[in-house]
Length: 258
Image (cartoon, rainbow, N blue to C red):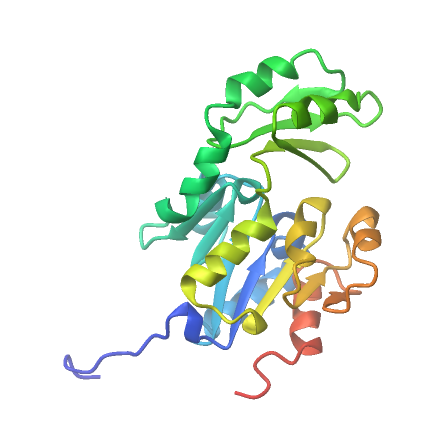
């Protein structure tokens, strides 16, 4: 290639498939061999496949994954259970998109201390040590959990979300993975029909149920499978983790026409 030649790299909206996937249990799920094979396939098809992480994890975790764990770099990130909407830059940093996060920040205000104070004595909740910008997260003991927490959060004008029967998140009203992903897809000009959404727990429900082609991988929690009953756009995979995603790509015939 001469120095005057340039490689034409399609924008994410021009790619044949945009995979918007949860991490734990989904994109990070499956055997070591299955993950390596799928990650290699992603890297070999970067000109045709876009990648968005939609996760409860924070930016630091995502950066560590891509730098140290051999996980493919995403193009964009919906993090912190939908409260972070960001690009993933060339330095492997999550760079929030301010115009998409402005409404999230406004809805949340400065609620962190108020939430922590209000839920301080609720049994079955242990505040997670990490500090988040627009959410408060707890480890939950389902055997000790007091449902009064739902009422306390609702009275504050915020939303609560339980996932995997062991996590309790407090979020801005009407903010979660699904709504934030839709805003990002619209912002980027991505045709929803080119997108495949993948997840495995109840904090993925809002994105799997939003009408975009979706897959609940084979290791999904029972509550999610039950909640998705009757959603014809959702493929209930037999295979776990990345193997379940690959199963759905074949099921929906992504890339077949290209």
